[in-house]
Length: 183
Image (cartoon, rainbow, N blue to C red; front, side):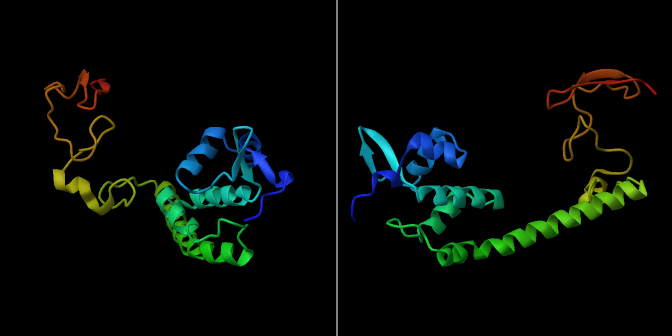
């Protein structure tokens, strides 16, 4: 490999600023093998300017929801001695489209569920797929079972709860204080 022209080398501070990252984040990605400094100039790390494309790819991959391990796996397929071609970038990002489409479908379904739930106003604990998916509350018996102080699956009648449920105060097993007005 021929030595890089000085104008194509960027100190870590410039890489961080241009990529919108902190210097420590740039170092983190280098430690994980996602980017590499080319050489040291006066004892300081310098990077070839193509590292900015790699950092942009990392940022996009993280927005999609890829883990560092998944990003490492895909970036291992890229050349290290030159900037990847548009065709190489397209090949690596192709699988993201299915992932994005899946997330869009999930979010649209959630949006419709919220609109239906808020729109109907029933707040039915037996039928609502948001508040009570698969009718989990029914497993604990009839009547009100869940509250902000007692998450699903936590037994009722905890020692910290008063025996008279119409009034009193206590602490939930999760450590949250509660009071009852006796209404």
